[in-house]
Length: 123
Ligand SMILES: [Zn+2]
Image (tube, rainbow, N blue to C red; front, side, top):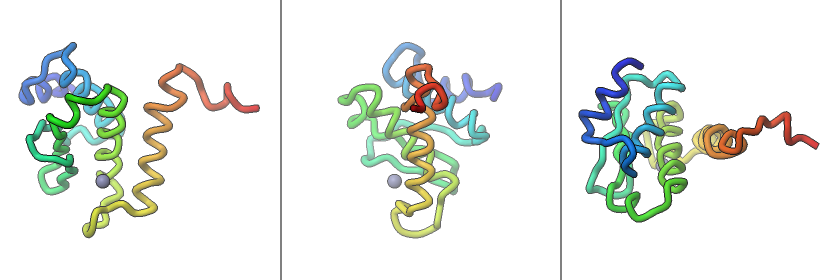
């Protein structure tokens, strides 16, 4: 947790920039989920990747810099969902992956973004 700022610095990210905002979001999610030893790296390659061997999430700079922030946050959650749903083969887009992905989107981009709790919006 304490080295999150250091890792952002290493990645060459500035607070307040689009890349900085995306990386800050990614590290906040990673830290919250206990994946403190993972890092985020900007890449010229596309699409992004979740690399278990080096505990690295590669984000495609060119693609994400042309999209709204919510798209990039969603992209980050997609890659983070791969961390603990890794099957070791194929694309990893298994039912287990999608369950985790949906959970993360709900938590970080869904009701939470509006400051609402699920209990508050139940009928
Ligand atoms: Zn994927």
